[in-house]
Every structure is written in structure tokens, then in C-alpha cells.
Image (cartoon, rainbow, N blue to C red):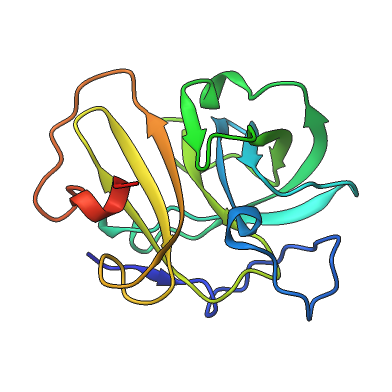
Length: 178
């Protein structure tokens, strides 16, 4: 499975912390989802300055060659948007915070629903990976080579239907093990 190196990517995101300070892994990433140009992000990062520019990535073979979606986190939400109602960002406690996201342009796809992950500025270099399970998609960040190094972050996006991932995109136990 091909992965993306967050250190190589120009994320275009600003943060509230000084650039030299590295954020803890649980605050370095977020799960984003939405429809058309509107969506939300779930993260443990506390965002206090809006708007915050972000790039939303969907790493993995199914999305190879797809450019990142660019947008802005525009406000805090009291709960996740409908697109992420059944998603989770580990650790579950304390609960992840939800923020509204507005894309700069509508994704160029027939299906206007989108999902991906955000690596905020200040995140340690990591390999990003997605894989499919029978009912959802696991998003992970790894300290080095995926499945062979320490997993830094994990989120799960429930599809609400049963899927049959192929061998290249199927999850391994290390993707979701606690």
C-alpha cells in the first residue's frame, strides 16, 4: 500500500502554536468529511483562531494522484456534522472537538461526498495510511513505515454499509488494534 509522507506535503495549515513546537500526536491530526464545499473536522486540537487554512488528504491507492482538498476551518461546532456522526477519533476520552470546514472549491467528482485526514502544522513527520474494513475506513498516522512502526494516531469512518475491500486496501490488525 502506498502512503504519503506528511513531511513532504505542503499542508498549508496555520496553527496557534509556534512553528518550532511539536504538537502531541493526538492533537496533530484530524478526520474531515462533508459534502460539496461544506463539512467538518474532528480533532483533539483546540483551535481558537479562525479561519485556519487546511489541506485534507486521502492517502492510499484508491486516491493516488488525487490532489489534497484545500479549505478553511471556520468555526467551532457543538457536535460533529452529519458526515462524521458515526466517526471516531482515538482516544475516545476526552471526546474530540468538532469544527466547521469550508472547502475552497467543490471536489471534482461525481459523488460530492468527501472524507480525509488533516495533518496540522507542527505535526511530527509521519506516514499516512488508509485501509478498508468490512464496514468502514481506518485512517492512521505512523512514526515510520506503516504497520511496522509505532502508530501515532487513528480514526475510523463508518460507511453505514458492508464493503469488500480488495487485498491492496484491506486493513491489517495493526491498523486498528488498541
